[in-house]
Image (cartoon, rainbow, N blue to C red; front, side, top):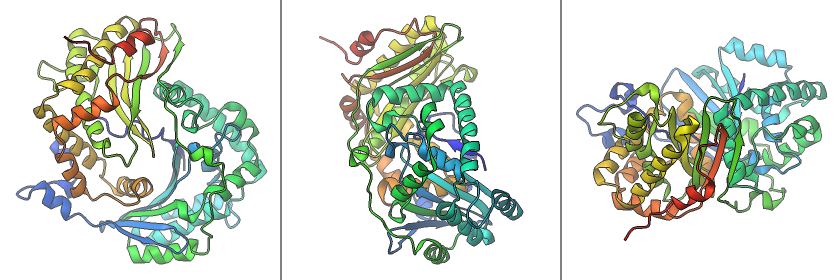
Length: 476
């Protein structure tokens, strides 16, 4: 029942090598056209209880199932004094309830052969269970008990402080997590999205039981929850179980400071943490992206796929489809890079994460920005068509297994209010042209102030004014 931390889905859609044999059987097409296969996927059924709780399922007929509760609350709902409470609550969920001790809970889950887990992001908190399909009623009863009857004992709270502080030390050794935390801090400075998910050390040491209870009362409301299920899940049965376990919970109203959920301010800026003792520099450069519901999101995802992801172990030749990967291969500019498109409700971050030696940073950043400018001005339709196919493959591959499908359902229900059918998503991707991508890149990237976060031996990284100056082309 370990926790796993997700930094806002920062690397959700990364381009990489694909193979047709890796595509899940449910998406493989022989004589049938892909769109026909997608139309025939099991439908996502939805129901809303009287208290506002939504139930959404996809019955694939598997012998196993994944069910989970997606809650529209994360670190973005916190303030400076309680930053870290959402993640703290995630840890406390498995420490016993008024009906079960921690030992009883663990034994019950293990005796079912099930798996219980949770994670926290900047906008969502998730609790889910994987089990045999006949154990779905029991698994949902356990999840409802965890969410509604956790004891939050003082002894368990004190013990969990040490666990979270140790987790913070582990996260500090994950340089990618560190850089993305710095990137959010500088891009959204002074706003809730700029804070970390774990919170500062002083908050972890001072968070009290009252803080946890207050957060639950404020945000753990049925109207902010989605019960998602995938695999061997009968929708009508799950609705009845949800009514039984959650139907009496009051809808509730948001009583928190409305400024926490207000508009987010993006600031083009930078933060550098120089440490010449480190062997490699880790750098993230991004511009403000689009929110989940924006129509510009798909063109940005296609542009993200065009940049791609690469590391030096992959090698590569003169026919590498990513021009940036080709430059890195020929001139040994980087150890790795990953393009990313991070989305939130009303904003996002679109950019690239680089790992390189300090002497290569100047040339590497120049090549990155030249590629960005090329996508703003002269990308070809052939490149777009290839990127669309890679993007569709990546997205379909991520739906392999009941847990991945369940996560997709829960996230989309919170972000869009519905689950976008796969054939609709394919159609929307197919409709994008090279001109669409250029227009969106001109809107979001061209002549925009970037956010830069860098850790390690970053002496060779160009100063911010040079990076800003390369966000446009001066041509006669």
